[in-house]
Length: 287
Image (cartoon, rainbow, N blue to C red; front, side):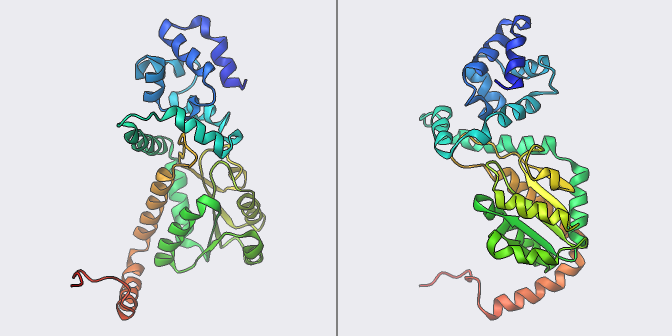
C-alpha cells in the first residue's frame, strides 16, 4: 500500500462510525476510489459529502482535493487502457441518469482546476507568450488535439507558433531554440516519452518552458519554468480534456487581450482572405 492508504488504515481507531465507512470503502476499492468525486465517494460509502471532507481533514490534508490527488497518483500511471475501461464499467452504472454523471465529472474537473490554479503562474505564462520570439508547442497522442487547438488560435494572434509532434520529424527544429523562445509541453497521464524528451531538451537550450499537465508530479514539471495544471481525471479509457481545454481557452483569451490592438488589423486581413477563397458557408440554405 502507498502512504495514503497506510495513513487511512492507521487512523481507523480514531474515526467515527461514518468515517470508518469511508475508510473501509477506500481500502477495499483502491483501484476505483481515485476516480471518484466527493459526491460519488459519499454515495458509495453511504455518508454525506461533508463527512468525506471532514475525513480528509482528519488525515491531515487541507481538504478532499489534496487527498484525492494522492489517491490518483497511487494508481493512474499503473493502469492500462483496458483496466481503465473495466473501472469505467464499475463506476458508471447503466441507469438512465448515468450519462449525466459524465458531465458531472467534467464539471468536477473544471472546479478542481479552478481551485488549484496558480494565478501568478498563469499570468507569467501569458506574459511569456506575448513577448516570445517564437512559440513551439509539443503535444503527442491524445494531447495532440489540445496542441492543434492551441496552435490554431495562438497563430491567429501571434503568427509565430509551431506545433511539434513527431520526435523523428521535429527534433531538428529544436536546434534553433534560445532564451527568446517559449516551448509549451502538453502531456497527461500516461505521459508520452517523446514529449518529455523534447521538453527537457528545450529546457537545456534555455528556452522559457511552460508545462500544461495534470499535476505537479508530472514528469514535465521538473523541466518547466511555469507549470500549469488542469484536472483530467475520468474513470474511463479516455482522459477528460474539458478542464485542460478550458485552461487553454483562458490562455488564448488573455494573450488576445494583451495583443488586441494588433489583432484587429490581422483579423481584417484574414477576413479578406477567407472571403476571397469563399471559406465559410453562407447563411442561406441551398434549394
